[in-house]
Image (tube, rainbow, N blue to C red; front, side, top):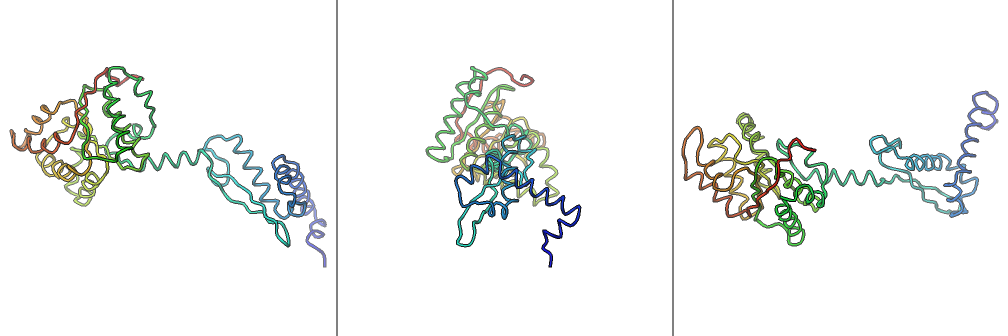
Length: 318
């Protein structure tokens, strides 16, 4: 009976396959990576190389592709962001080569970034503000006029890392475009690295969207529960929303009532606290309601440290 090799030699296509296999073996045997591997493992003889040729070839191919990495989004390897690693073991009968897929540094960095970002929920805030990463030095250098505010935010982050979360939040007050939202996104991003969850809510759009949630009570409850339970909550541009009694008393009131003395809440606003109280004391539906304005402020004022964010308007600048 003829062997498979003899059968292959008897046909044109068979001879071509054998030639390709021999060329593949020659390339693998001469590759510096395999030469180095065989020097480390003398037991990896010619027979062992032949038996594990595909694994060794994959190892060389992916190593070379990683050396000239085109970027994670264009990774040519069989498993995106992973390369083949070999482990050689001597056996009583033969030498065995085991391969495994290992994540590269770029994949690990992206996974870490995705993990951090997944801890932060964004409601109507530009996602780019939460996904770009931050440099404390750059934040300090951007505008010397807001150094005090930046310092207070950075101190807060460092304090949480050392002492853990406290119920006290921050109220960032300042003119348009001074970077209040940016600083809160920085805080959320930095503390997400430490495993804390966070949410940031752009109040004008949130107030409008709540109207549609009347028709979807389950979504409304889920949204409110997220804002109650997240470790760090930021109400962005508070005081700019079109206020109605339901938003103030049943949504904001419920969230703040739950969080006070439990978890920190943060605010950015163009108003100081007195102006915000006046905002909460009047609605287009019920007119002047000073008592209800005071009641909601009793759930804000004692639980925030006021931070004045000075500086120039950075919107529209690079």
